[in-house]
Image (cartoon, rainbow, N blue to C red; front, top):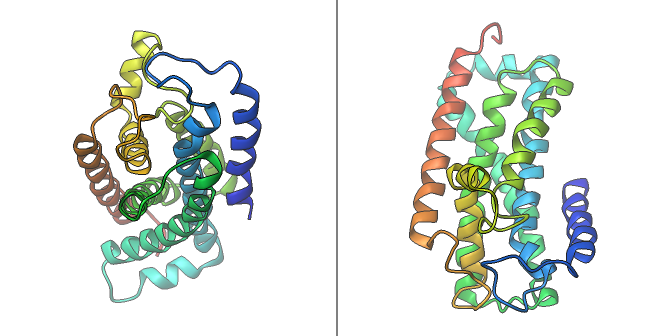
Length: 236
């Protein structure tokens, strides 16, 4: 419930508070901030769920359950894949709940846009869960895990175009946002939700490029999480 409530509160409070002053360059005229923020808040829901799902790795190690899993006659690549798919399923289910709010903000969902948005959310969930596993496999305390996740993932989300568009920001910040892989995940989700709609600015990355970068992000984070599981000392 907290993984759903936190993004929802952010969306309502920030969307209402910033709606009157929202008029950045590169965003179609007449777009409310609540409407612009909608794809970003879905991404935040996926991000929070990935954090809550991967923290179980730290708890399982402390309770001895992870050691029992690691002595099973299966590869750690398979173990990490199972963990990633479990977290991905949770994130996708919770993120999908926000799609029911689309009519409230005026998002014209069609069957194609709904299915394509779910596909992007699935890919994003898998990549974010693997990123969380890369950190969780290295941590021995939940406090340290939360500190690292907040230090890394919240700024990554803020600089993804979910909170404010890339256009109009200082040049250094613009390059950071362009190099951020989550920027392309948010752009892909935005283009799928608002397929052929005027709210999508031509300044955000194109759908093909966004899908390629998001897919590469998933592959890289999965291999990184699996390699981290192999290198983790004193867990078995």
